[in-house]
Length: 117
Image (tube, rainbow, N blue to C red; front, side, top):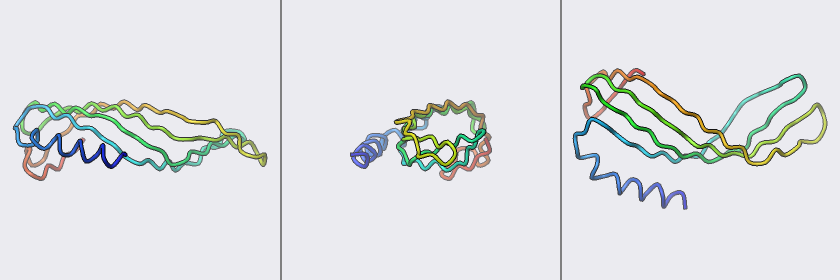
């Protein structure tokens, strides 16, 4: 199902790539691996692999500068470990990071667009 959604978004966005607009809207779908070691006074959290999707909007002010705003929804199963006791399932955990960044495009919106942000 997720591959069908990704293919649909790729096909639907193809005509938009041909236009030279001051704004880009991008949809994201990905598989997420959360690798962390969180230990708080004997409590430890464990996150399973999850699923993420999101959208980002990149607004260009000129050929070399833009601002990008992104929001993602990350879903994963989590459990809590207390000392040597069996793991306690917390259930599904939804994380929603919101990001805002300024980008400096080194090649000025060329076909390959490296940037510092």
